[in-house]
Image 1 (cartoon, rainbow, N blue to C red):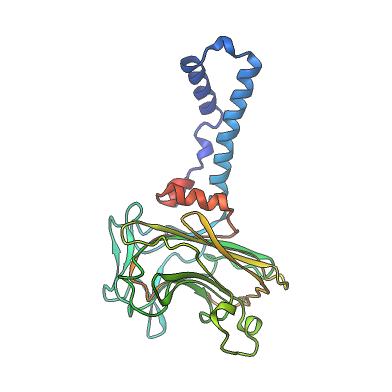
Image 2: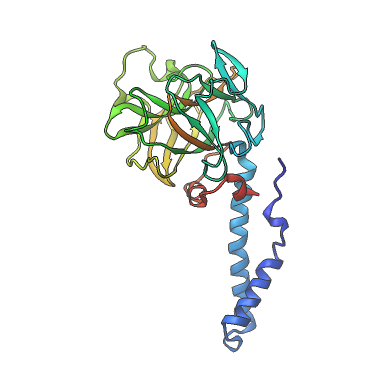
Length: 313
């Protein structure tokens, strides 16, 4: 999919016309010296340029994007854009959940979304190679998506992972967000579990509060409105306890995982972007970025409240 950069739409012409029109219609020209008008013009142009730079920066760091507006395959993908189903522990192209998970047209942020209806539906995933960028040294990135779900009344008991990304299992070199297995409200959490030999070398039953998990402070989820979820990570694979992973809901930072040696040994292993594990609700606008987005970037995605491609085109 080819997206036309916004800066090609007359970067210098638009601010100039807008400022001249504003000055002629709403301001007394006698109050503005030529220098004052120049300063105003430059200020307006700078504001527009900052917006454009932000949008092109999002676009340049985007590695994967699935809008679910026209189908189940990704709109933008550095790697394989196809959706797969795990059938008898083997990948099979397409959606083979016997309609337990389906494309819900007109139910998304704009356009379609994925609707998960049963906890025991077969697992869906995208290939992570190139789509979910990995670096052996000083690794960073971001995942963004939207959920519409009532955790109390729509989810069955047990852990629920709307997304999990790993070549192994949930507790070995894995990222995930989950709803806790019980509670009222059910806690929503980010997990960033390094290689198991790093965070749990003795393979003990470590209590959850001592694991690399962070619970959200708020609980904005509802069946009537969309909730934006994002998580970032940076300084992973440095060999030091300086990695940080942060969870955001509706543009606000909910907490961070810190002071862990976040060593992920993914090289040579096919990692997967698993979605909707035990989940029952709507899921939309999945995006992966090869850098840790700033808090401002995440706020802009949430405030946009539309499909991502309309923000970056």
